[in-house]
Length: 293
Length: 267
Image (tube, rainbow over all chains, first blue to last red; front, side, top):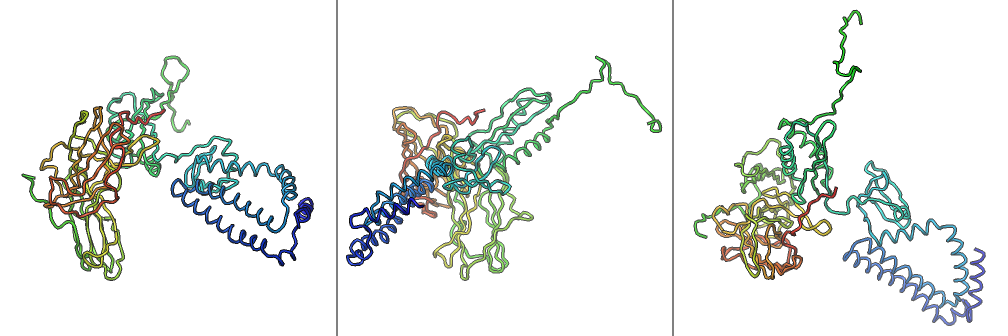
């Protein structure tokens, strides 16, 4: 702060004529220009940047609009501020020099914050997600509430707020679950070995077709997964709209179970064989009276 | 059209709000609607019969009623048939190849939605209450995974001939003229109809849409679609009863199914 105060004093002295309130009041031309710059220029820049934001938001999206707004407003506002100081008779060289020294000091102290701010611009520019999207970061999943300068705020599905620094999102892998309008729901299904695989496949496709929330295209698929320990395993893959995902994920498993039950197709559970130790002999059983037990 | 009897009349247009305590029933194809008025409110309930089954016109137990408290003086309803709010994907009766420089005409039946509006006087400014599909259409994705759109899937097929069995109270007949102006043959397996741009016309109780001309120039993204301003010649003299949802009589849009199908399987 001492450096800035000294620089401010130097700025007053170094300018030709320097900052002189009496002179400005006697010859108010520079003062009027400075006032005009301040009271007309700043609102004009604000209006311009807001107009650009609305235009870009309408044409592209809100995030691009926000980036353009900030990129236009702050540099122009800085130029106006510098011009106002110059009109008032300040020399900017000492101020800028001091600001540079101060900037380096602040920069060392706030590396993380600066990194987050720059990362925030990358996120807004690259747009891997937008407000309202559902993202997965590590084992956390939630809906993006805001994309701020330093962090992204996410609301988890159990209604907690998670703050993720922008730098973390730029450096690490995350998944945007709702990036595309449609999504696939996979339902694992196992049936007994004695069942007719072709019939099972047909029934599963019918179940998918009968569900009004399942999209006709991309077509539902039944994928053979393998011969499992207790069952022949399939995967029923259906496509749904993002907003129907949970509805279908829950509903179609119920539909499959009901339909397979109705068709008499067994969904086996894991079978466990007990081995008593004798290679081929049956499991020995000893009957005891209740009194002896 | 020879051999086609007249369709139902009096379904569409204005009608007074039911009297206090009165219940009216409207049968529109598989859709049954009930209108009821009570304590200054309008109540509407509906049910649909499953595909191909004879509709059960009795009010189901526990039918969910939608209720509107009506403004003073709003005593007239207006019912109109409108097209669904998204494009429709249609399969021709049999996939066919449209040779280069050839044309084909197909007829597509499209189930309407019933738009219910309220107004203070017949012909007055109308306020929308609800829209009820006469048939629940399945949804589908049209396009590829990166660049596509939601659409409805039409289970009825497009026909090459206009026959009496095509006419139904709740379906609009749309004549689609396909012109292959390219130097390649065009395999027509499925096509997307931009029904949001179509108006509904009525003649002899049957519903029609203006003729749609689809001009294929070789690149599907550049397929040109033109809508006429009148009903097709098959329904000459029909009057417009519902305007299109969206403006635009000529535009480019992806219309034909891509040759590479969406497998939807990536592991």
